[in-house]
Image (tube, rainbow, N blue to C red; front, top):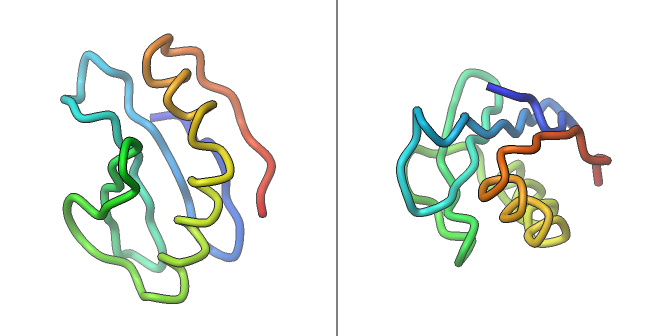
Length: 83
């Protein structure tokens, strides 16, 4: 599972598509808590992380949404800059 970015203790990863399912989403982890965020509408699909960290993660995802969707479709993972 490639690590796309880590900042402020938040880790954001994306699994390889053959091990995943639609809709396109990413995995966020903070201090042992995890959630899945839908890349199409930025909603939390499952799990939870603290509100402050979720807001930071969503801000980063919004900023990188097109690149994240491209990576989901093409499976060309790369690290992205933090906030």
